[in-house]
Image (cartoon, rainbow, N blue to C red):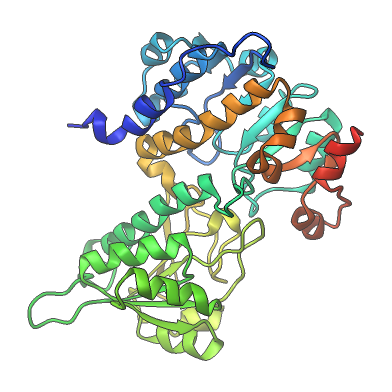
Length: 406
């Protein structure tokens, strides 16, 4: 049985404390916030839990939720209605009635056609799957696009990315343990081994948040854990946090080859914030891995960091290449849809409240560094240099655009 105090307390308790409307004289804008059902890549999460809707409504905002939007995360339409949301039947109603759209995945082609002039869109961008056509569509409409991957607070943290990466790192090892079993055509070994039988070797590429939580989980299983990264300080920090129970090495070609040749599991967790993941593992390296070993590329939403990886789906999550099982779902946290929805709500609702409190998205971007960093399209301009470089497009600095009022 789910205990509300564990799953929802961070939202229920933390977000409902601000019940009163803004004082007279303060700038305040009543937002119309739309939550459409997710349609891309078997996405099961929803952007806002009912508790987040309740917090927004308590602050004077209107929320429209598409019928069935929370079903796969086990949130009923009745829960949303009781929280104060208006339930509407079609996505077209949500997009046409609301000035601010909040989603988990980026809009599909069909949803892009529903976007309205000068809307605010807050969602993941998924750098591995985005296109110049999509970005130009947003610019033509004057959309303010804010991407989960780019939202970075003043302390340097990526709050939404971190929450999802904690889930991804934990899930990656759980998934790998299952695919190692004989019933999944794996090597037929346990991660932790047993008395007299040595544990499996888990190689983790990347010492970031995904890598850290994958290492924690693998150690919990009792596996032998090797972490590779190009950042020596990141490796040092992980060693410190995990009491030197892991083996670390620089992610050079030689070390990667040597580690993969004896790996039972490889977790792809190497990323660069706001950019496509670097490809560290070549086809030839995978060919030399033991047959029946498992690769979980947790960076598929950023393009993947293993050459033999290609995106898979929840209905067909794995494939075999060179005798190695590959699990490469771009939206892994979707399989923990309820937990992931609470995590998103915890982070998103305070940002939505800030937009309402400041009176306009322009003022919100000026005042809040997290939202400003998260913006990739604003006033018909691309504002992320990384995207401009990726697609050969011009860009404008977001702070100059805000200051100039262009």
